[in-house]
Length: 325
Image (cartoon, rainbow, N blue to C red):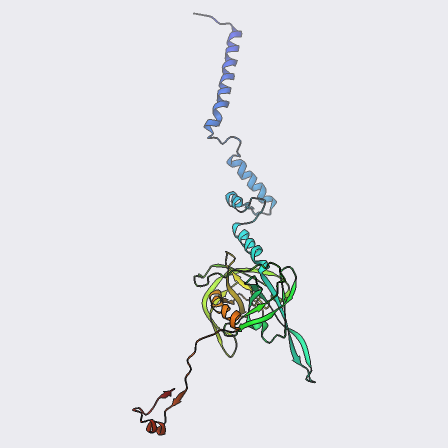
């Protein structure tokens, strides 16, 4: 049996303690599951309580990092929906024009007096300078001024009108400049709840973007005492006087409608606006450009109500009805 001195025992004990400590330090990260360096649940709770205290009791959410990354990085602070809206506006804004008109009236001495007429919006639909707008914007105008997105003002000429659908086509001379056009999309596959965007010049205050959804389809609205416009798109995107004739866009930046009117008891938007579907525009715009009006089919006939003398004269086998010729 070997005997050890007191000094040797102390050295051995210290060495064993040091070895055990080093082993614990080395094995610790493995046991912790790779969580070393992260705040514990207690530290996270303390940090949350500290943040809540600094914001008056509300915990601010920073958003999902993956979504932030897909939306252009954390620094942008924009959601995917916001980025999509911005992308559509920046791509189509230059294709929207402001329209102002003048009318000539007669004063008490029957002298012609120019006065400000309607103001509205329009969409450039062709590089040659064709602009689609509402008929009521340019109806009765003696002078039309079309203002581009860059502030350039050009005279406009009415090429064709269709009062039945409240659409009109104007022509401007681009003087060699390249125009931004707005493509026509499909309105026959729209769904209620689909996102839409409207660009226009409400109250002539300047270019304005509003967003909303398709609230209803195939609406019939009485435009005035003479006729009803059928097949309209209903939207809650804010539309006000001056938006008339501007585009209603889908999320791809395609024009699916032409903003035309609102239901309102105040004259301002209350969330019930209407647009002429793009399928209607697609069908009639070629006629407006080529003929100045829509060439519709008709049945030409002269009905005559039957009366006894006519029945006897024509020896008809009936005594009542209509004679069509």
